[in-house]
Image 1 (tube, rainbow, N blue to C red):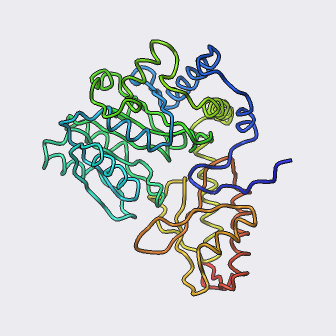
Image 2: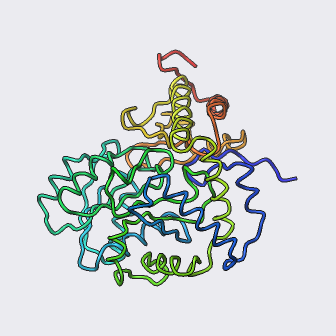
Length: 376
């Protein structure tokens, strides 16, 4: 009998269902026709989520989501291209670092960690620098949970005749993204996020014409999405050893996603989780970092208690002992911690987590104040 694992209230890896974990108990041959069919089914189901079968290819890639982001930049941006990177958190900074390492020219536009980039910002920046060929945006910045206005920015990028690359790692599958309405060359996500699979596989939705024009751009043999797609189209197989168990788990997770009601139902559950969490934490006097208008229902950043006895490591270990794993903060200016709303969890789980957090803070002799200022 395996020990009971803590619930992961994190932005991925996250808590998965028993069905998803069970799917990994079968071994697959990487060239076997049944596995090829599994891969094809996963790609088709992913494309259906964004209504992208007519306009885009879905190209999977071994590795974490960052592998897929690097692959998309390296494949789509030519050596003489230039990327405008929009930053309001750690993952925007990572995207700029990828451009630097790959030797792609880039400029950055940073806003505060609680301030979305606006379409007007992008319009002004593109007018000011005609040499920009691509714009790179983080849809939901996981370091805070902030949501950037993808549809509006996408239309501005298109109006300038530029190309858009979207890191939708923490939003895809939960927040609505329709390829028929939102123009983009690449939209990047991964198996271990809102689809509730396990980590180990990224995937990129690539505009068919943009991908066809990308031959020879890539810096890497293994991360060349043009060649990855070409080989899959010709053989049905992955070019190099696939993450077979991850693919099988994602296929099972996608079946459950469809049974639940797809993107609208997934969003509704996560939004309920988020609201339950915010209300419960407010009763303890714990304030969220972001205002509600720009808070995505993916992960919430909370201000840490301002008390000499609060230490995140002790707080983390005590909450973990009660069955919940949280995330440290990722801000540089203020001390915070983060609680994820995604995964195979519901509002009952969120209430239990809040209760555990309250018990831990009391055990640490840290006074709690409700939103009204009354001891909680």
